Length: 105
Image (cartoon, rainbow, N blue to C red):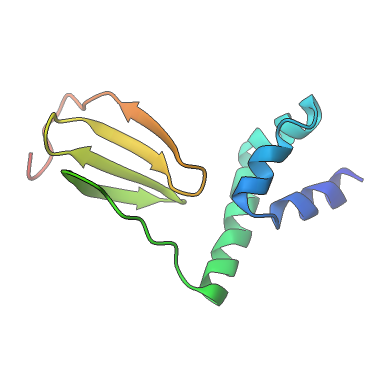
């Protein structure tokens, strides 16, 4: 039964999956697991190639640092902040500045 539930949840849009986290603790644990995240990302990747790409627009002074697995790292040009964002869920986390300097900064 869990496999069927996992397959169904993996095919939902991110907004629906985030809402499903509040159904019960077992669903929350499943959806939060690394395995499920990778499975959902794989299904999302297939869907994006069928229907196009997700576009992200930055307002203000931000620069794209890089992206991986649906996450986007941006830096603020104004106050040297690094932000990690998931455009699908609109979550944003401030990252500590690296101790080493990277090219361009």
